[in-house]
Image (tube, rainbow, N blue to C red; front, side):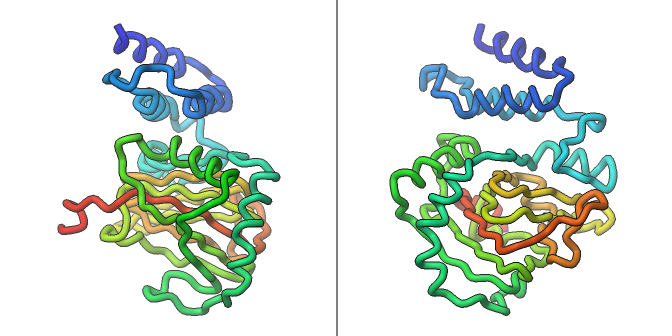
Length: 260
């Protein structure tokens, strides 16, 4: 009975021609309180993942995605998603009010241990005030299934206006298959490039106050970078860069992958 309901619901979404409406419906589901009992085999998260993976098509490319070809599009539409305006201006202000007093005591670094980042300062944070804990709970609910173990510390990465993140893949020994990041203070362009084929790539528009979720293929098979202010273009349009703070959550590493 429930499986039939899931299929009916997903087919209904697939028939929607308005991509914004589809995304809105899925987001409402993901943010809603549980609508099935915990002992149900198919959860709200399962429906969200199943339906969202069925919906996209080449003709309905999201406005935040500019893929080089059909292969890159196919890889990323199933493994990368951006939620614009995931937080409000007041919520952004709340996060920065908690982060700024500490971040301002740090200096911007020019070198990183793996040469992946320049013009940055970073820290990790485990304890948050109640308002910001609620924001991060929403991120966790939409990015990670309830059974997935998340890293206890949230990564804070502060890029100065001229800062840059060079193409890299996060080490598998440090985190698992999903990376979720809030973009604060500035819009930026993330470029994903296939590890084995540089011609297969895509630019992702990470708008201010958006949430991105990168998992599976986009996380393991694509190098990701944040373009510097001189290269910051999206679909031919200049994207102005400023200081950008990312609040990043990850799940624990997969022990099998980490050992391979």
